[in-house]
Image (cartoon, rainbow, N blue to C red; front, side, top):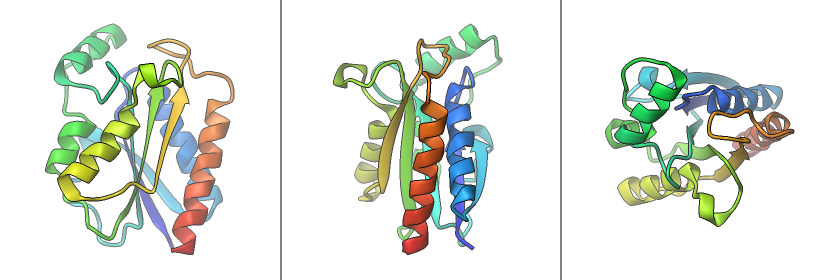
Length: 169
């Protein structure tokens, strides 16, 4: 069976909701999928993993930083800052043969808003010479959310597309 791991960084629950919807689409496509918060993500990925999906909110046109994480956690009323996707990518051992996809949540879908997903893809390319198989953005109506109408449905559809692509490899 094809296996996928979705590693997500989320502060207000919107990026996590997209990760869960992507997982539902993967599962509907016959892929075993698991969602984990970046703080619990393994540094060494299982050897039988077929697809890694990374998701984060867009902060200041890119990936969250220590400063933006701290601000988001304060706004969300949560505790201490833990490492995010950026740090996890710097430490994780991602096998060369593993397919990777990336997504983010953004306030608007324009070039001015930037994209954490594109930053993830760029970091993977720079650090490992790897190309992501797919990059997607999902819209929230404000920094704390909620998700714009139809975004969870779109995320399930994207998960299904990823499942079809992973199954054909």
